[in-house]
Image (tube, rainbow, N blue to C red):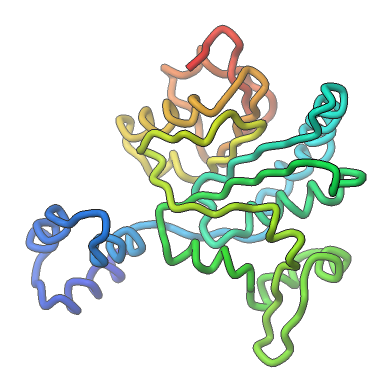
Length: 248
């Protein structure tokens, strides 16, 4: 991150961070430099089906429970939010897993919302095209079913019917949202980088999109703040549900 910021200072012929801070502090939301600063600041390490134990729990417990619940209600709809989705591997992994789990998925309303503050990584995510070395870590059955290979560029592209399951938006998690109630919210490896004040804002905003049945999934290296322990019940390592005693 430090090297990326130094590069921005050199490009602008600015010789110290204080001067650069003054430059971006007066920028509006449409200022290109502000977006370049955000891109330099954010960490975007991710890969398909990251954290195998979490995805096994999703496959064996959470998604079957959601599917049974929605079939019983007759609604046949599932809404998932992949917050801080980076270059898109997480929401695409979720879409592929749901496609595998749901019979007659064409009769369902599947809405996967994928957001990130970084426009650059969102452009990559929307294209859904990845280098072979990234994709070929997955089982060959998934590659054959969900990707098309471009031999000229040595890349794989997510097939259209999977990409259509996902809507990508730029969003700052510190800002209030109006995305509605979710069945699952994934906010992995975000809280660990925030101070307590920012973490409180992010969790408070995420709670607004939860019901008592919403699953909340964070990274293995993260933990909820103590003052939120009354709002969530523990389900499994890094997986929680909001308690029905609290409504945002």
